[in-house]
Amino acid sequence: MCAPYHGWLAVLGDKIKYTWIGISRKGVFFVAELSSMRNIGKELERKLKGIGIDSAEALIAAGSKDAFFRLKLLHPNVCLVHLQVLQGAIDDVAYNQLSDEVKRDLKNFSDGLK
Image (cartoon, rainbow, N blue to C red; front, top):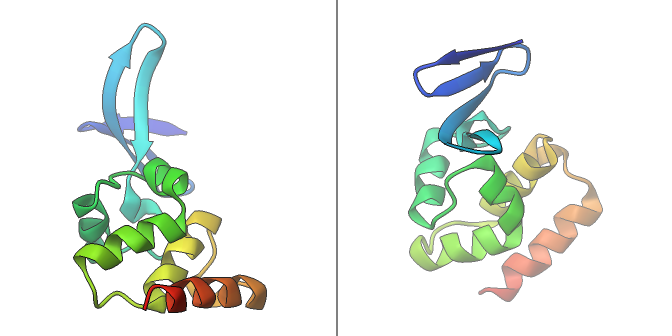
């Protein structure tokens, strides 16, 4: 069940917030807010918006590795945990519940940026 409210929709069961972005002939368009994704807090959301990733859809389209690379350019102190958080958000799992194979892949990618 969805209810419009001040420019966003709240999907009450899943607690996902959607931001209204426009209307066209094809309908009304909404994008999911980054902070509605698992693992993404307000600070990481702020950093992601700073690199042009302003919605859940944009993060999913970019992928965790591209988003992390772009974050690393602006925020050199981001670390492997940030990459795992991004992947967990995309996969909708807690970052510490990623499979060992995924964790290894992300670690290899992160190590390659050093």
